[in-house]
Image (cartoon, rainbow over all chains, first blue to last red; front, side, top):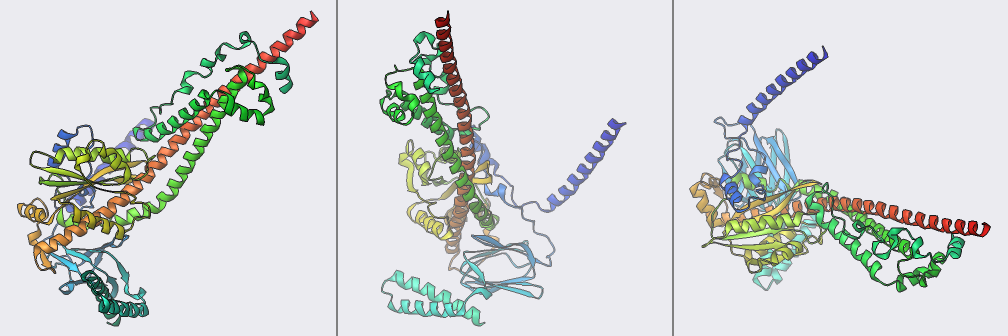
Length: 207
Length: 373
């Protein structure tokens, strides 16, 4: 009796597993990465040179897979906003982001044409329904992909409400003085960067 | 104990148990360095072997130094050993002394390895959090530009990330082995392949046979906690001083405290990137509109340089994290080995002591019975 019970249990488990496998396969077909996960040519060449050493992993095999481009434009934009010390926004669906590109503020909605944009110091705002989160970013890059995913990589970013206006004014005055007294090209360039960042901060706080 | 010794004096050689001659004071397996048993993974062999070598040296020093110095110091301290200055080498009191000294040194080494393990464990926690937070940083670049490890270019630069300190299992030799294989893979008749080495240990290992191929070395990366600014300056330095078509960053990716995976990221120079993009190997850059920058090549240069600094930052953190994890497990197995050794030494010590007491008792009793009879 017990043995039968075990067998029945096993069959139901197997059936459940098969069902789960099928459902996960359905999901995985929907989320197949655009490129192949590993480079087979590299693996073969490696095997020839060093058969005793395991082929090193490559970023492609460690990446989280990205969804393919769909024919219909999705209603939401998926945003990744990463900093060196943390992932500020990871795979979040929002309505719109406005990024401070070097050519001017750029609003990104779902279905935006794929773009590579260099960022300048300025305000990045994330619109989600009625909520607007504003960050001040120092510099970086924004990539908008055809599948309505926006990746924003910044070196430094802080929420706008954490910035002290008095310190900004002081810094602006300091760098203006430095720009005036700069003698070499390098000093001048450094002071100019300081002035740019602080005036952008000032403008962000004012606006 | 003391008066027993005093009246028994130095035993005649005939009274000694057979294993008491100086040459066979220890069973041979105690004098030889204890090879890590098969249960210890290969990666942990180095520190364990080193600790054991230290033990052996310690032991030999004690054995070789002819009794005066340590024995005299001991004699001043313990009255029981007072008569050993006149005892011939290899007499029983000396033998227990040697084992005792050895036990002490093993215990000290065990203390050190335990402390190192604790230090690594506490550091690991902080670094692990930073590492996990930095993992998002390189993903946008790979999603955009793709990754082509098989790219065939003229000037290859292998950036091998290793640690500055040793006693951390096999992570440095793994990095070096992968770098060497990669060097073999990328060098050819019309191609050249150079090393840029981060960390003292990788430099020491690679300088032996590939001295001419080392373009640049950097050490003391981990003196302060790794931060992005520091890595960005370093990346800038590498980009300025090294000519490259493809940079290959080799590091150990942290998986768990006991496992790490050698990983390689390929970063192409802007020109090669443009060429490869046209041939369709990497992400199709032409389908992207480019905002900012005067020309496409200018923005590509900014992009690849930024990618390099981001990849380096994550790689340095991953490697630091793997190092601490490996050190933790290496030191753990070292202190376990020292404990095993200590157990065996204690057993030998007690057995020798017991044998000497028994001999003395036999002598006294037989003497007494001889007087009676």
